[in-house]
Length: 226
Image 1 (spheres, rainbow, N blue to C red):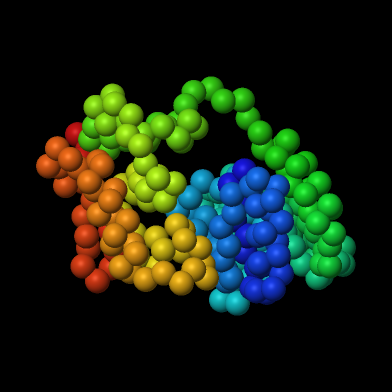
Image 2: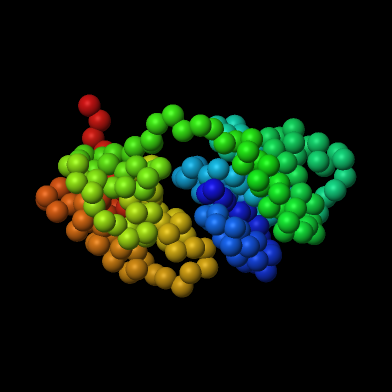
């Protein structure tokens, strides 16, 4: 599954990310509530692991805002609060389940599996994202241009999917770097610019200008509407 971890404790966050990746999950990690909302609105997470106590916005506020926004994936609340009133409050605001710190990873994995069973839906059809002659199948991860498959690296694919999920929206450089390399990766805007150039060579070889550089802000992909 594609998971978002919102946890401000760096030691615990690093450990949880490591263990989840060992379980073959894809994981993004943020360390405050505002970033949790930003990431959740810009990706299609199956499950969000949400710490109750975080800077900027706490887990309850994040949970409430995401449900109001329309996020329908699973939310697992993580907290040191183990009182009945606190558990009820979290569930009332939209959390699907609750785990109390400190926890064993076996319990965390079991709760994730239980939520996965609840949210799993039969695949009716492949989800296709497209712009111009480019098509990206989010199920098979196949990218085609004019019906011909294009070979992309994992990071090129991630970047293109981000653009296609947010057409005509300027995505800030910091957001793109965090989503592709990770929150604590030591990369610069130069790395992002180089990745964009490589992607452009593969999807704009016909002279089209799909990806636009918004100077001082970030990048966006233009999708014409008719």
